[in-house]
Length: 109
Image 1 (cartoon, helix red, strand yellow):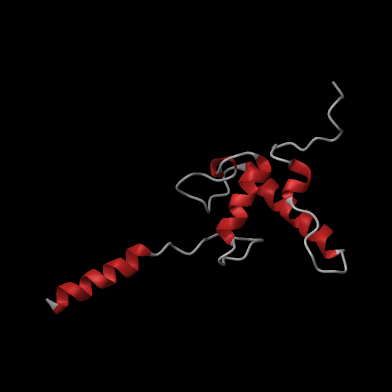
Image 2: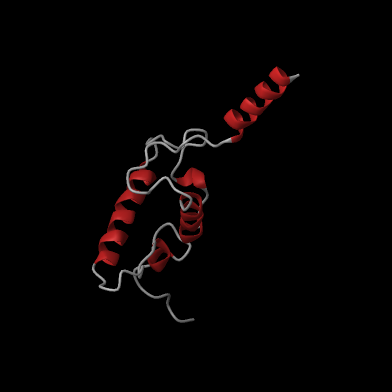
């Protein structure tokens, strides 16, 4: 009985945890990763598979993932120039729910 309980407990621990994220080049693998990814989906109006290969999130197969890395770097660089240390620019600042940000205001109707 004790052996069965121990095996069951080990199985729950082994299979109940999410594997550590791989191939993170700019973002930390911490408790903010999933909320950050959810913010990207809102900012771009897209789902995860816009940048990621479903089932292999570490893959760099989709070029949008590399573009996202450039955009993350750009936002970090801009925010680093503010002396207060706060986040002033995010993906949503420009994208507003669109994959391509508007470069001029919408024409008046």
